[in-house]
Every structure is written in structure tokens, then in C-alpha cells.
Image (spheres, rainbow, N blue to C red):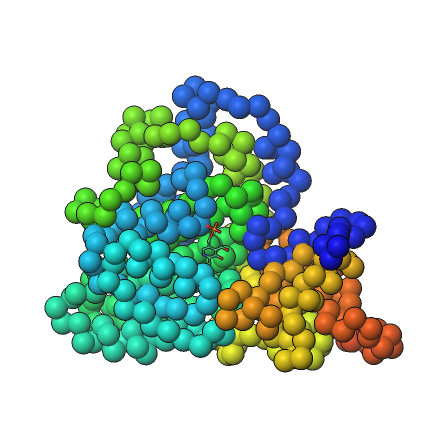
Length: 401
Ligand code: PLP
């Protein structure tokens, strides 16, 4: 049997689902409640106000849907677009690929802009398309902020700049599943029309809430969008918002209490501090990869992700084997390479409720791809890595004081 649990605690370093902090686990350990009682709507009201903060929006309308990121995608698309609408979508890895597949199955007319996996969205092509589209046939731009399969973060501010430069009215739809609440994300400032995330990523909750936030322009678009939608219809939510009972169907009471505590933890730390922490942990991971003599799948620094690092392994090594070994030997869960990069990369997730020492538990244990490393060599690498990281972490911490 290849997959047997090793002793000790499981070190969960896949890029979602992530570790759930103890206070959140405790908050969720409770009985069901009547969601029509006064208590649940009262708490829901605070949640709807507070989730807006993680999107950095004051004008957006949030929907907390019992679903996953995939459902949140569908909610964003079907509420704002009609079948046959032309949209531009960037293919840079497995999750953008899956979103594009959904867009095509929902019968949108998708201009796919493809980049090599490891690169960011090709925004030069977007500029060309916007410049040529005098008739405004493009109805939406769809982009994954952080491609979890390759550890690539796209530049959303530039997308907004281009839309403004060409005075193009296309809706700006963003998958923030592995970015929101961990990376710099500014819904209002960047004029994002629909942004979405899933509870199991940076919010550090179990899977089960898809949070979608719609701008006033997106809400307006939903009035004429003709895509068939039932479960995901924003209108049903809006009716219950007006009534003050909030829920068109049964929410998970436990997840709502978990979300309340998760948000409290985030605000206690400070959202900007949470983002700065992700930036430190991202840098520390990249330093470790360098110290191991391995390469980042992400080809340029401008695209480096502070929530996930996809590590390229030498061609004679199968990265799936590394993931298996890490699990078996260290009880360490790393992310597999997906699709085009299967066998070529393993992924380290460094998002959510995580601190420096926890991350060291993943990075400093062992040179991950050599089953029989030379001990002195290994120790030297670990020391160098620890030294560099402590300097890096310390310098960053000083900057923040
Ligand atoms: N988008 C991104 C960027 C993701 O990383 C994922 C899942 O990892 C999804 C969408 C799909 O989310 P879910 O698996 O919750 O449906």
C-alpha cells in the first residue's frame, strides 16, 4: 500500500482546502438552528456587511451561496450574460481551463486567449481585442486572478486600465478563489463587476460557501441576462434581503458560525496584515525552492503567487512520486501537478490561517525530491534556507512595525 498515514499530525499544504483554525472548528461544533428564527438573520446581516470588506467593496452586493467555487463561477456567468454573448477568457492553467469549459457549456461565445502554463494572462492580446471592438461586441472579460495550478497571479489593475483606456463597457468578472483574503484584491478600485471566492481557501473554512459579490453594473446586467438560472438566481436572494430573512433556501448553520469566527480572526489580525503575511510566506517558500536547487513553474517574478508555489522537478523525476513520498514518509500533503503539468510539478499551498513555523514544518523537513540525500548537504541547505528566511521574515516584520 503506497498511501498509508505516517505518524504525527498531518501537514496540510495543498492549495485548498486548507487548515481550519481551532476557534473556527469550535465555533462550528454546534447543533442546527431554525434559520427563520431572529438569530440567524441577525447574524447573516453582519456577515453580508463584513464579507464586503474582504472584497474591498462598499458598493457591491454579496451572495453567500451553499456551493463551491465552481458554483460561484456559474452564478457569476448566468446572472450577467446571455447565451451567445461574446466573452474574452484567459487560459493559463487547469482552473482557467475548467472555467472556460463551463463558459462554453453555458453556450457563450468564448474568445480563448491562451498562454503557456507558467505564464500570466496575455494582456497585449486583450488590448488588441478591445481596440478592435468598436461595436462593443465583447460583453465580458473573465479572468482567474490566481491560477492555483501553476501559481500565477494576474495583474487585474492592468485589465481595468485597458478597459478604461479603450472606454470599453465589458463586464469584468474575476475568479478570486485562491486570492481573495490573501492577495491584494480591490473590487471597487479596480472596477471589478463580479468577484467570487470559496470558503475552503483563504477563509480557512470547510468547503461549502461560494461567496459572489456583484457591482451595481452587474446587478443591472442581471435584469436583462437571459441565461437559464434557478438555484443561482441572485433575484431570489434579493427578494429575501428585502424581507430581512435573507435565505431563499436552507443555509448551513455551522458554516455561518464558522464564517463569523473566520472573519473575526481576519479583522483582528487586520486584512492588510493578512495580505502582508501571505507575501512573507510566499517569499519564504520561493527561497526554499531556490535553496533546493529547483525552479518555480511561474516564469516571471511579476506573476509570482503568494498563495501557491508550483515547483518544477528535474525531467527524470515524477512529481507525483514526490507527493506520494511526502505523504507516506512525513504525513505532508502537497498538491499534485494537474493536466499539462502533471508529473512535472508539485504544489505547495501557503494560504489561509498559517504561520511561519507551520510553513517551516513543510519546507524544512527534507529535500523533497531526493529519497536518499547526503546528510551534510541536506543540513547545509536547511540551514541556509532557515537563515535566509529568518532574515527575510525579520526584515519584513521590521518594515511593518
Ligand atoms: N478557481 C480556482 C482558482 C481554484 O483554485 C478552484 C479550486 O481549487 C476552483 C476555481 C474551483 O473551486 P471548487 O473546487 O471549490 O469548485
